[in-house]
Length: 431
Image (cartoon, rainbow, N blue to C red; front, side):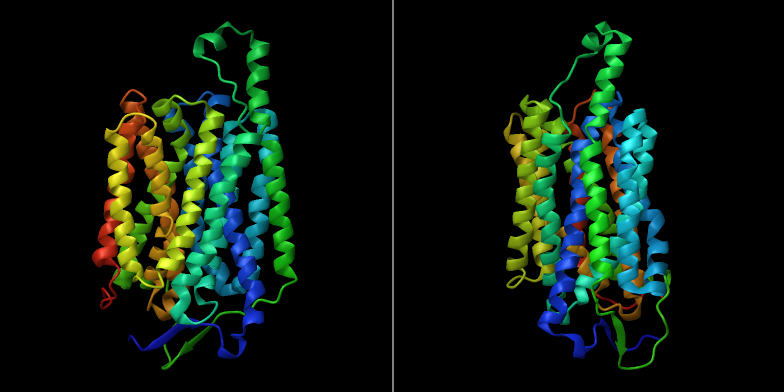
């Protein structure tokens, strides 16, 4: 039986500015850290494609490895939240991600692509726990009226990472040295081996630093008192169930929308550098700076979106942004020249508010199903594993033409448009 509920909130006695400021700052740091992980992938994919001599589908497995972890860890992450609470779950997620980042060192030493994929999978498992905890925690870390605004503000630091990561990755990881197949064939076995090992070793220092940062933040969480979320209901009601959460129609549609949105975002960033090289004829280091500009626009969109949401309802802004993103994809597919890359950068601005807005609209009004609903929305991030592989397949089947592949994110944005127009509406449960 469905009852009226105030959903999950922090007890009113704890809602004091200074009490909540430090926890919110730490949550923002989490958004920044997993933003660094994801936005280094845009550098890592073309880099490992070169170092390990991969085709598009093989290189897209970088996305598959990390985002598949979201799918497989969503249920365990929800169980962790219910059993240990938000603080302990966040610490576990941070340490697990740190272990994965440290495994980049032996993978690089052995030039083992499967080793890189395994390390990324472990990082993804840790981040899945972090996102399952941090997204709903930031949404309820204060009054219900400001949930979407808080979530977008915290997610703005994810956008900041989208700006920083490509610049750092471009400097520390990309060498700018590229050889044609004929040039590689003319090298001796020793020269080729040395070149590939040198390329692979460039990832060791950045990921070692990332591992250290994750451990330090875990220590900070351990010594910080976090207010735990409590359920406050006007009538007694049963605990939410994992499968039962999908009885909320708008949550189910939000899960599908999140699947397509994340897939579209990963497609844009993962193939950005190759698109810039092929479409504008620029080298990989310069392309990485353009990817950083994309990140800057993404971050700007997050902050601008947070401000605009004070005046426009979140579902309306989501619809407007998704329509524009779809149109920009169309231009990228049909256009010619460097301005195609500019269109991809602009997509970053209009994608910026989609994830947190879909998330907040999806868990709105589902009461005790909030934690399970959060797990479903995190599970839907598996779109980042599936959709880029589909795009890579389209590209490989069309003679390595990157542009034609952008029809895949275009279709994804069209579903987000549907969610923003109608799918978000809270209706009676499906069962």
